Length: 254
Image (cartoon, rainbow, N blue to C red; front, side, top):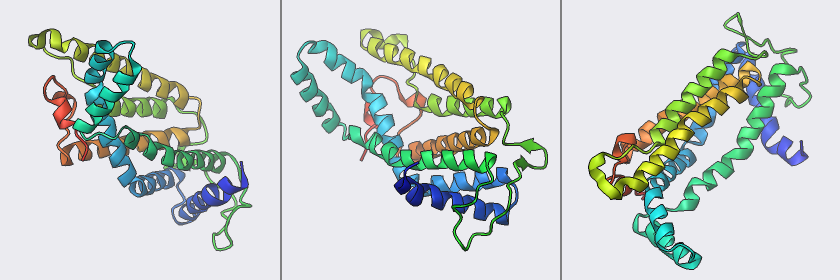
């Protein structure tokens, strides 16, 4: 772990984790508080990312039409795609940049939770943070967050399913005719992702200490709830809004 990463991200988060544990000696509750605080700090970035992802998702069928219409002409495809983005006020980078900003924070949280649940090394504590000596990984008196937990892994997968489903394109009605074929293809692809992502979440989550699976579950639930708020606030609509003739308009990002 590089010195810069340790000093700027890992150490402050680790000290915050231990300080909270000194106040509330239940590591499960501490993980909940850390997750909520992190989500509140990153709320503006997450909101922007969610809006952009939803808008890009709604534009996918139109982008596929452009690729088919101008197949082999990459310059025209690029120009028409940028025109489509401009007409719908979508910034494709807006969905990526927030994630890139958050990635180092998530990595730091991963190491903090991993080390905090398995080690008793408190050398990086600030002088004003009390050394607890050891961290009891039992939550609520019986749930050991240091061991693996298939239950929490499944819960994390279920939360991932819910979050992904809100972004999923709806299968177009038969009345949509030929114009709905691309919509149908995109809906099928999204449906595959709907089950693949939760499956991978459960598979990976079961290999991690339960504390990390708990964080994954709580973080995903809070992200899904934020999606609900963002969709409602900006009138983006949920899966039901993604029908031909509606999703593109409702997917605009101001």
